[in-house]
Length: 134
Image 1 (cartoon, rainbow, N blue to C red):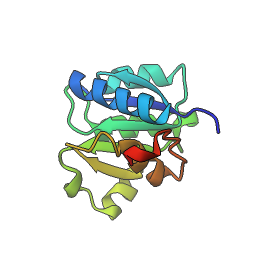
Image 2 (image 1 turned 90 degrees about the vertical axis):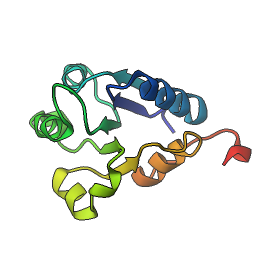
Image 3 (image 1 turned 180 degrees about the vertical axis):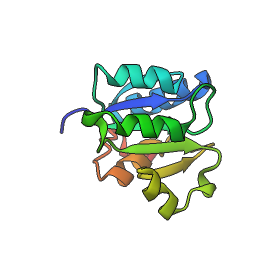
């Protein structure tokens, strides 16, 4: 299986570092991190990840505005988006579907199980090498 490519958009440096380490070290995925939705849109002009992990509350541009702009990019219309948010419980299945988002993962999350959670949501093999940590 080819290595998966992840774009993480989160304004908190500690979250970016933790998610990048977990997904890279535990699952072997390539993770690109940016600190704002605007940076994410610029990054998407040059590259196309397999999934976007998106914080909901960010300065400058919130997740809803980002999603509208994302869907205006022809190559990104079917790109899966997963929200990482302290407000995950606010998002019902119907609301997520209306937003074009596949899942909302609650912060704080378990860093060790994060790759499996993402893999399960997207139907991927997580490729976690050390089975004993699951």
